[in-house]
Length: 637
Image 1 (cartoon, rainbow, N blue to C red):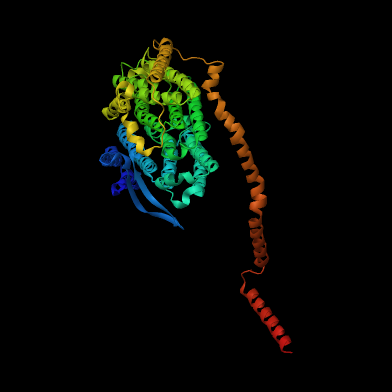
Image 2: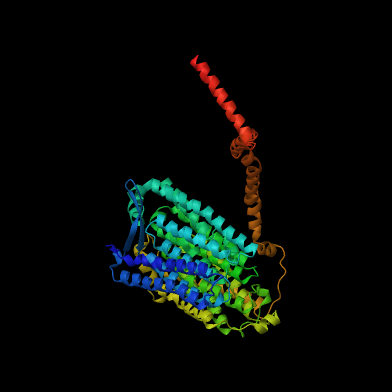
């Protein structure tokens, strides 16, 4: 039985109020009063921390309820009504939204704390934290929204904040272009999301457009309409979660400050597409074709991104492509209807990927914003805390047992193989080995061997505690979070899968101890091979390579951006030039300009009569009276 609680509405409200207050404080004091950075930092952290505390309250309340009826709702107000349709500004607290809410607010709070040190000395310190709070508030709305319309508010909000934060250093044109790219690519995906909502409403929305009503009436959807809705909504997910063909914005998004990369492009926003598919599991579970398409798009994205990641030299772009690759794993999971496995990987990924991005930020901070790994080396001795925490995050990302990424990735691979998706499992296994290779290529080049830039190395030192403490906390999560869903083969009872069960429509893969042992053994072997190759090539020092052939092709990311530019961007620009130079002036603007020219001609004609002399106006009056008298006399006769 659902229970109404008003504190659900406070969870997004705290960071939103923080954004407004910090933004106004920045605007009204900018160039007038120097507000201490500590004040901005304190104000920025209050909202996320309070939201996390209330998220814990939601978890406690749900745990106290019977498993089958764990549901909290809050309708703030009626947003709009059309006939019998009423769309509320409503929030839904169930096991799925609660899990997302817990790690979004927890990781978000840690990243805000980290940012106090990382952004120190920035001239727009207040504006940065206003944007960060606004983003977190929008992400919470996305997670807690009780239907696709409310979700879309948060969906668009995080897209806007992503644009603002990616192009934060707007003095550099490249950063502005990266922000524009993210905004435009996401709008393409959002069009699919909007069309999907329209078809969904057309099919069953008249009886209610919240998740509970949609789930109750999903059987009324025609199969063709259901498939159309699934694919259109997935187009929205490919934009937000950077899947083929709309993945190109995320690597360029590394132009923003490193805490932005950790918060938006690792732990929260980019997982929104996976969350959306899981939230609509009651729809996707009945459309197998859509699930297969999602799984294959996801695993091919994972493979493509892993190939690119193997040859990058920017530490943040290596992690960016690893994010795209891990998102591909998540979509492979939800595509084979293993929704809890996909969400479990979202959960573990939030810890180890946020850890790796913040660790990379610590390195960049120590080296005065140097990001090229081939200008680093030997930092293990200079930055031991950063090294150890990043090593833990790398082991989790690469899928080393018993770190968190191993359990969540293994569950996805097992679900794929157990449900007959051999190709997806095989590619996923290959990607696992590639992930281990490029992750430890980064670790060995950055932290091992001899320093390549001696001067930068001499000045490097460990980051302050405000930055390293969040790293340590996230490292604990990266190490132990996987045990929360320990499979029965290891003596666990899959706590997270059981927790999520009431929120998901899922057919669990058949249990087979032998098959699961095989999957685990194959994953461990793939990890060992990848890390062994990386160790042999980079652990004892390596010079910057000169790529040729396929390696050069992969280093340039298969020239996909250039292909999009030639096939899509330039033709659209050419069409725009034709419209601007020919259609607008000769078709759209011509009638308006003709009317204005007519008035100008009439004005010029009357202008000759307006000479400015009283005697001339007297003559006009006499002539006018004479003409009037003549007309009147003629009419009287």
